[in-house]
Structure formats: C-alpha cells, structure tokens
Length: 474
Image 1 (cartoon, rainbow, N blue to C red):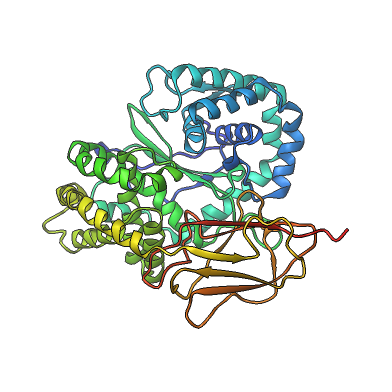
Image 2: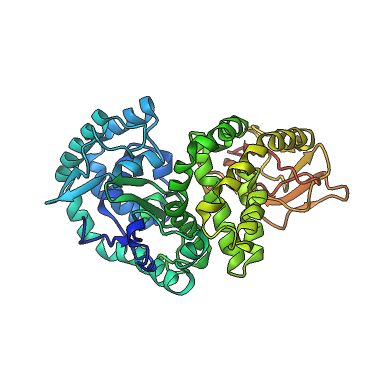
C-alpha cells in the first residue's frame, strides 16, 4: 500500500480498543499528486492555487507538453457534466492503489461504497485507465523522483510541528471509543490552501484522510508548518471519531438535518457539503475542534473558531459546543460519546425553529453597501484618486476584512498608503491608496470564510466584489 511514500497510521478498530493512538506522520502521496496535477492542467480553479511558484513552474514545464492528452480533456468533461471537482477529485485518488507504477482500484469500482457520488464505476474506471497512459507518456514517476527533496520539505515540518503540539490522546479521552479504521495525513503542494477529508471503506473499517494543502512558507520560500495549521489537522482527525456515530444515528438525525440543510444550503454547497448528512459530520467535527482548543488552554482560538464556523453557515455551532461541554462535565452519566448521542439528537431536533428565527433576525440586521468611490465596475477611474470610500446603510462594527481576489490574486489589490478608518458614525470606511494608470483592480469585502465587515449588531455583510480600472494617460 504505497509503502515507499505513505505511512499508514492505524488507529485501531473496536476489536483493538487498547491500541494507543500515535502522532501522525505527514507524507506526500503520488496518487494525490497525480490527480491534483491532472485537474490543475484541466483548469479547475481549486487546483490552480499552489503557493510554491517554483513547484508550479516545474509542473507546467514537465507536464505542459502533455496538456492536450485525452485525460485532460476527459477531466474537463467530468467537471462540466458531473461536477467532478474539489473533494471528488481527492476521493478518487485515495480509492486507488499503486502496483508496479500502475494505478489500480483498491476495490472494484462496481463494489466500492465510499467513492464520492459524482463518480460512476464507468467514469472512475475510464479516468484510471487514462491516468496510467498519461503517467507513462508524461513520465510522471520521473517527475516524482525529481521532486523528492521538495516533497520531503513539505512533509517534514508538519510532522515535526505535530510531534510537539498535537495531542492525539485527546480523542479517546473525549470520545471514549477509538476510531474505526485508520488515519493518514497527506501534504498536497498542488492544492495550496485547499484541504480535503475523503474516506475509503473496506472490510477493515473506515480509512480517513487529511489531505492538507501546503500554503505556509518561510522567508526563504521553504515550506513551513506553524501551529496555525493545527486546527485543520485536529478537524480532519475528528472525522475518524465522528462520522460513524452520525451514520449509526442517521435515522434519528435525518428529520432535523433535512429541515436545517435547506436553510443554509448555499453556504454548505460553497464548501462542497452537498447533503444534510455531510453537514452533520461537519457540525460535530467542528464543535469537537472548538472543544479541543478549549481543553488545551486556547480560549481566544476557540472563540475565533466559533465565529469562523458561524460565518460558514453552522449557525448552531456555539450552542453545540456548549452542549459538548455538558458531556465533558458529566462523564459519570455519559462514559462515552455514544452514550451522549441521544442528547445530540435532541439538540438538533430543537434547532430548526431556532435557526429559522435567527435567519429572520439576521435578514433584518444585515448591512448593505450604499455607494463605492470609485464607482464599482468603472473602467475610466482617475489614477490620481487617493482614497477608496465605501458607504454602508447602517453603523458597522469596528472591524474590516478586505479580501484578495481569488481570480486575480494580490497583484489586483490597490497599493495602500495608510490604514483604513471609519468615520464617526461608523457608516463610512476610507482606504488610502496609490493607484497606477492603466491597471485593473479587484478585491472583496468579506468572503465565504471571512466576514470581518459586520453591522454593529454583529450580522455579517454578504461578500461584495469590487472591481474597477484606471485610465491609461497614453
């Protein structure tokens, strides 16, 4: 099972309840790299956000001559016709094995139950067939050998950071029962800031993967891993302890989940959470991460985590975290999380009415942009303009969040000459800038994952795209 590049961290099954949990070892996986590179060449935006310019350039130089391969065309078709993107790509990757430098299904695609539903047995088989031809034609394995040192530099900082800062024993202490199957931590340099948690199920149990993008680098451009990434690893690890419990109580959770999901469907789908069950996985995992932060003496991090999750549509997150606090405080009554799951079901049964009322309140309090100077969308802005002024329809909280355009990047953000500031009544914010002639600018107020612009009452502004171009004096 890819012994050369993958270290499998066995967490133990229910039958091996005394097996200790080890700190995960990060690796770079050729299955993940191969599939990520293919969808990068196919133009999927989520696989074109790599943060290492040198690695991206190496990919383009090595594989660019093969960008017209039938596999790339097929990948584009899968995205257009079946929505194969984001986590669906990584799901296929971890359902493959490698034998003699050939990609093969771990279980027949006709029999496997855990492959993401955007794949059919026929499309998965055809993709795998073409992937092998592409790997041979493009000398994929030669590329992996050439990049061995870079791949090691992606994995080693993560392993070292986790050895010091990660507490794998917390999961069994908290949940009271070990995970089912295994957990593997894979670094994915093609994926930039993208992280995925696919799973593979066989007779041995549920094998959960944390596929973590490489986005942190030191001043010399070498991959790094600060504790900022720790919540991501904690999150993915939680899936091994949460998902099967949601599945065991699915019939009891479905009535509430089926009511809640349509209320927040837009936000869920933007995060590739396509149904109520996935939303339930994420709800309990995210609440578990916040409890982990609280249990490890990071109340500020826990508060920021709660705000982040609420902004992402998990409007019940803080209440669920508090509920899990009751579980922690009464382990005599609830020795394991299994014993507490009826309380979780009861909690969600009460949430639809609460969330419905909260959404009505937010709609009444949600701020809007009244005007923007220069005019949003203008293509003849005077480059001598020194301020960008944004007026809101109501007083705002004293915070702001200008977001880099994911399409055009940092180069499209105006050069600033000072700090943003609100006026006295908190309805207008001014950003001092130095514009260049003949240039297009684009940025956002807020994003799906960052809602710093809020009303004074705390309701976030819906993301606003701002774009304009300056006149070229020539």
